[in-house]
Length: 140
Image: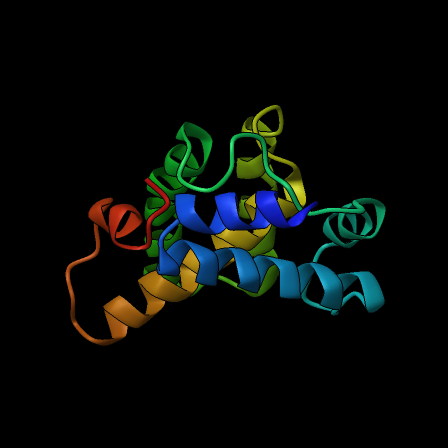
């Protein structure tokens, strides 16, 4: 990636989007070094096999929006039912398989985890959680 690509990329995304992208890139590097116990092995393998962390169409495209809006409901179910992390990870993997043509599993997985944290924080703060969350975090 040359300097022109970097400048163009930064000018096309908001600061929140850049924040999400940088979190994903950091997770990518972490998982490539050592796979945490709570992360499914296929996700870590995809991180390790990917030289760069580039989704089709970038952040804010139709795929990231669909993933976000759909996963908000899954995250709410997880929080209200008190499921295990293993069950959540299985749901995320099953869910991300639907979008595997648009986004690699590992990218989808990190987006889903980011959404889960946002939904959890909103629920803990007694805030309304709906699909407008996806616009607020610039995934739509």
